[in-house]
Length: 83
Image 1 (tube, one colour):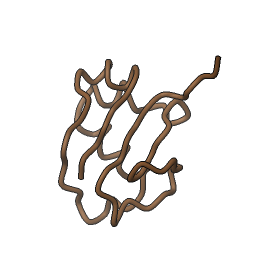
Image 2: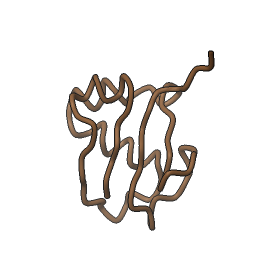
Image 3: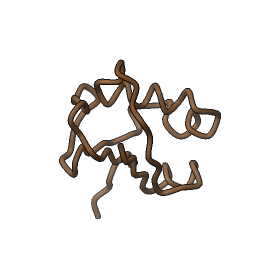
Image 4: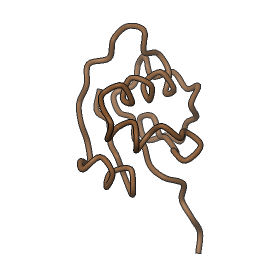
């Protein structure tokens, strides 16, 4: 699965994307974020406060309970502001 990062999430991780193989127990966005946080301190620092993370699954806005079992891409980004 391709994971895309935007905004300060990208800055904190030092990369705009990565590709990972999902273990069978990772079924939702929240499962994915927990898996990513376990990768190390950069991921944990960038993703540990899920209230500060927005998500899109296959380019559709989603929430933490959204299934990713059939997804090809997940994007993680900070909240958007208007102006």
